[in-house]
Length: 440
Ligand code: GDP
Image 1: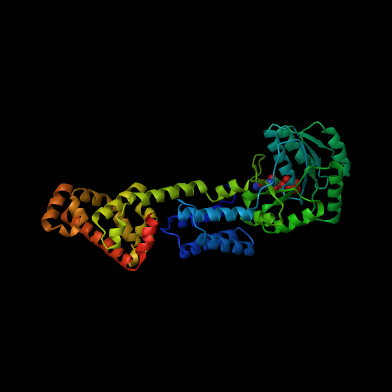
Image 2: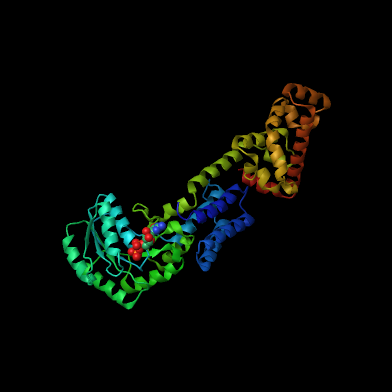
């Protein structure tokens, strides 16, 4: 996957969000800060990042989630929408006969992209031919000829011919019967006057339906200026961003281009002819954010919430029975390593009113959880409801029934007491209302 560094950081931020028990200003601020860091590292413009952050914060805290939707899901959706907004909508690529002129600076990946684009249309069943009119860069002729022959695409070129417009005129006649005609033009090291004049002349001669500008992703935000300059000079209908596979600045290039209003048409993701794809913003951002994985994580969290059938009213009154604890443990058991799921559950994420569990506590709990359950299975319903009635005699009976030692049973009762106190504290501090809201 291209831009996996950016993707990893953004996914980390959203995982944190999903793991949060509830959405409040603190968690939104924290997640937005992570997103900012990720985007700035990917060279997205500071002003753009700040504006986007502001919108995510405002919308997350003000907009009500759609009926029946999870508040976390709602914020993930907002982040997704805002990311799509900064990348802009992709160009409209039609699968029909057309002439395409390719422009761009030398080394941007123009010739390679001509072959990739030809292959794209060829794979869609269209008859494609290319014209090699880059007579400025030595080697461009041979490069496109070889690439085309390999891909079985018709190539027209005139080696050592100095007049690019002449090549185009003769070439267009030669390839008249082809559906898609792609013209490779010369680049320069900068957008100089003679390059502009040449592009204008070829434009006049070939009358292309599309003019695609090829930009190297490694130039980051500078892609915006280049897109604007070429657009002013010859009018650009779509942008191809190449070498997204080899740079950490992809976010900068994509967003800067989108800001100029020129749509991104394709992205280059490697050196081979197939390392090329049509740019579809929604799909691209979905993949970048790992939406599929986030969705299943969210479902897991929602499931655990549902399965944790705590008696919220009683807990608010300070009553946290062994049944409640049992329900918690059951849910956790289903979900894998305790440390990981603890943060997803109300118990872990709310800090338990000051009784935060340390990593060491959690590790110990994870090991002990299994026999805690065995012990609880040997208790009566009344004992689970009110563990205070568990006398020394009852402990012996439970010990016999479960095959666990009396110490282990006392330890479980102590663990329960800690949890119960924590909930009492939490309810006392007014957290109950939030919890109740969250459990619904
Ligand atoms: P031109 O001067 O614009 O025609 O540039 P070329 O097409 O010759 O490309 C310059 C270099 O970039 C070549 O070595 C290509 O293989 C490489 N290149 C082009 N597109 C990509 C891409 O998407 N990914 C990678 N990794 N390399 C690319």
